[in-house]
Length: 123
Image (cartoon, rainbow, N blue to C red):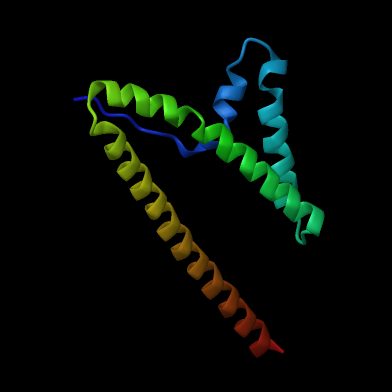
């Protein structure tokens, strides 16, 4: 039985970008990563910032999903069921990430509300 694990950081091609023969080969992914971090570090986003965030996300999604056609083909050559198993596993992982993000968001909202109430009481 073979098991595989996947590091979520790989979604941004950072490790792949740093493991190239030359700096120029991985520079595009690292530049996009740095640009995204710079934009997300801002307190307020302009319309241009929002548009750039969406554009970078689209590029990363395409870069990440492109190999899955090949992976599915390889899995299908082993067993016709394996591509479906891979899709179910990826769906489950995505659902877990969404649930975790929702839980984190609720926690952050509760902390912000508590802080706002505390400042209101002090005034």
